[in-house]
Image 1 (cartoon, rainbow over the protein chains, first blue to last red):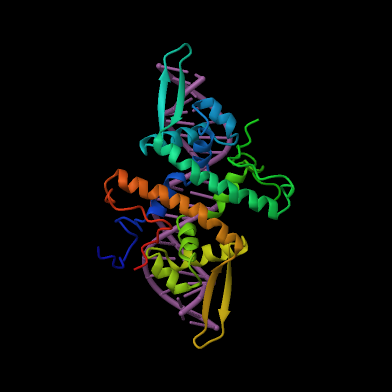
Image 2 (cartoon, protein in one colour):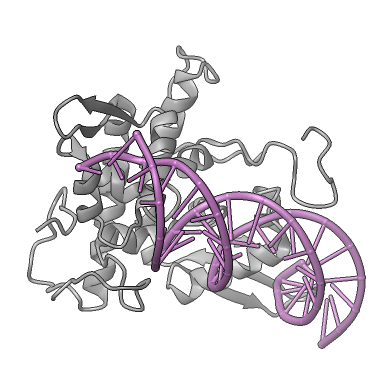
Length: 132
Length: 132
DNA sequence: CGGCATCCCAAGCGATACTG
DNA sequence: CAGTATCGCTTGGGATGCCG
């Protein structure tokens, strides 16, 4: 494909590489946390809000919808009373876990480098988010 | 500055977990591509612009400065004529490569799932960006 | 409980022009 | 070559309130 300089910002696929492709899924302030929070099983809307304290309902809702459209998770309505909704990772969602885990590992290296994590403490593998 | 209008957006630490920590480094449209482009050695400013076609000079410049401040890469000025500037990953920058590679792997899975990459073709390990 | 509607703000990015 | 300056747009996100 001829990738010529376009005068203006691309109406066409912008750098259609695998990296950008996947990054666009886990971009944004909360999407990675949502996926990460779901890695150990289904969670409900308000559970996710508690997992990721500062997220607003609007944004969480938006992210969830987007992640569902992208095939990362599934929304499941349980017709109980009161009705409850569960979100669960799809296979694609599961595929993201190793990538996120790799990112978390780097995050811990950063904390150690800044002395925010005791260096003698082992780096937790498959570390949890701060879910109390 | 200390007395911000407290009506909106949180003045408090936003989920200081390892995941968010590292994500903030590789967030944005181009930061991951920059790191990825540097993984096989130093690159110059305009080389990076060619590696990542749609990025503007302003944004690239901003990202590079930010990544340098964060300790991800080093800026090295060669006093030739005309002077040239090289950017190179630090150790921290290198640490990011496995994470980005994991992301790229997912990216290829996505492409395959959509039939944009021949399924019989092997998934390139440590795949390159489209650097011709 | 699980959202959506509304309003607003700030960051990120692109385009163009200009500089040392 | 390697940027900076300026501008304006688009997007993401927060706060609050309402609703089935």
